[in-house]
Length: 394
Image (cartoon, rainbow, N blue to C red; front, top):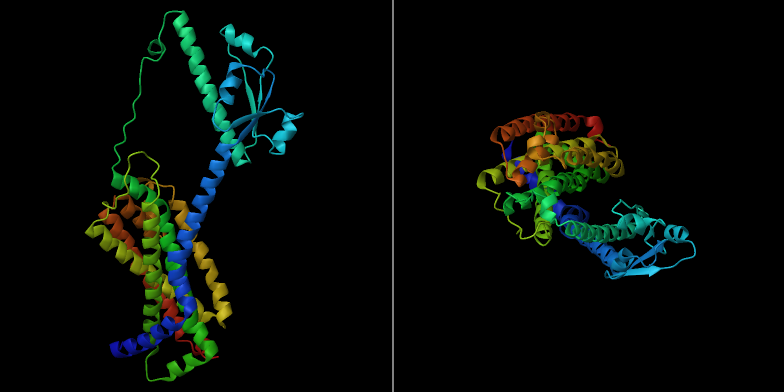
């Protein structure tokens, strides 16, 4: 290979990409603007729905209208008792969120020390109805606690007598572990999608696009080896993929740093990132970027037009999503060893270990070595197709 030729072609290709707005929209605007905006909209929508659902909770009661449990429910914030002619129809039409059905002998069974049955009808397909169920469950639990305490006092016992063991749960997870657990669920998926989508516009334009414009023929006819041209294009696509992945990583980290971690007194911390884990992260990003760049350039070369190349590349996104979703719910210790060998799986598994703060050295070595094989295959396929004159010349 001729380094000077590669540099010249790379400068030409990268300059063209810098001038192409759609390339930068895919590489930067989507990760930095669209992804955070989607998270903010989803978070705001969910918060708004929950706030509205808890501010107004219309319930209907059949049977005992003035039971102490009903009075206890009525006193809760947001709860309003309605009296529709047909409670079940009102529930189906979302006029009420739940219907409490007291049997005629409910109070009698409670007073006699027997178990009384309360039926609560709700609509699990309606999120607001599910919130109403939670409110009712909490009220019933508090009512049960009051009844049990009264019965214990009547026979001279205390709650400790029937609950001799008090269980106290204490978390051993550090702030770094809690942060890593959160990041390891979604960031590997977003990194893979960014690596794929960030390079797609560049790969499509650098081969299929140039074939349509007729500039690729001029470039190939120049006294430059096709391997040098392909290498320059590969580097340009890799850079766009890497920029997109880094932008996604940065924006998602900022978003999660502003979100609650689900536990009280837990502070967002990136202390799990060390020099060795960062080095492995960068290497895996480069290898995955090279593999996807090779595949995308191969597809772009095989495509007869710019539009055809876009169509053929779309399935790559779904191919990347499958392993990401398969590994997403797994703890790093539960990830099968086979995943560290399979393409894409290996990168996601290593990303998960890195963000979880549990990077295993030999897992990283296996993933890197296997990725080198897949990079070689992808670039080899792209090189073989790029040398075919029937695919390059229109």
